[in-house]
Image 1 (cartoon, one colour):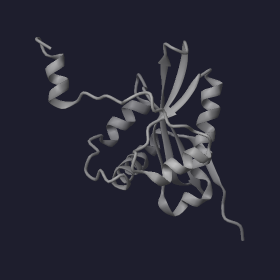
Image 2 (cartoon, one colour):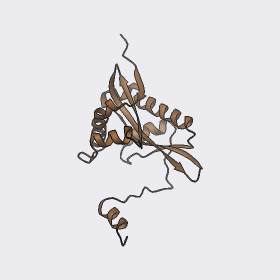
Image 3 (cartoon, rainbow, N blue to C red):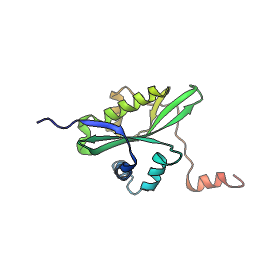
Image 4 (cartoon, rainbow, N blue to C red):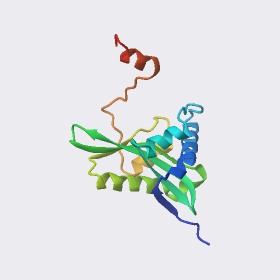
Length: 164
């Protein structure tokens, strides 16, 4: 008997709880347990609220979610066009050899092309060797000419403050 195939579909509001669980599992896999501050209702607002700022795809087998990709559109002033940024990609460990990650990325590449995006970008932890190898096999390259900079917490508040 053959295994059921992986299906990729747009996320629906009823997926929010499982998407949140996947976000938590991804953080644990990346060795950031407890780092997730977002709640399911934050995710619901970002994906399905009155002003959605992100989109998600769900990978499922026989109607059971096994992974997801969360993405948003940005703009490149250099390219003069939209870009697609992948925020999170996660497939449950026991399903990783089924091609679901590749299928999610393929659907995102198609989405990028359909929306006229000049680029499809994402970040990956330097310590995530399996993911880096996977992305390289797909033809992705590392961008060495930039550093990701971040302000958060007290630093963000200080800059935003009256004397910032």
